[in-house]
Amino acid sequence: MKNIRRLHVGKTLSEVAIHNGVVYLAGQIAEDAKQDIAGQTREVLGHIDRLLTEAGSDKSCILMCQIYLADMKDFPAMNAVWNEWVADGNAPPRATVEAKLAKPEWLVEMVVTAAQK
Image (cartoon, rainbow, N blue to C red; front, side, top):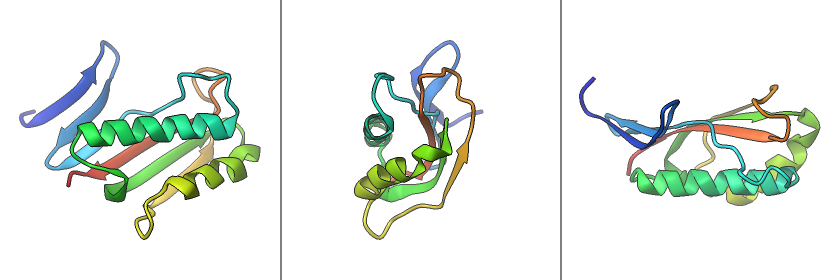
């Protein structure tokens, strides 16, 4: 398909795809999986900030966020970090579910769709 731009393309996935002014991020996880849920969440949100900036967007343009938690007991701590980070007045639609993630040390994974600025 024409007019699709991909960033950080690997054999298995691209970290970002951009089409018709919409930015799609791959699931973001913490590289330092030894952190607790708050630390992993902060790292994931940092990855999201960086990738959105590269794609010509930012957190105020998020259209949808899907959050996967390895254990729902971590919801309050994850949500506290999210609430500190989310752009005032621009909280996006969001879903949070418990899921078995690809690696047991991963506590959170987030998938974001955003508009370009």
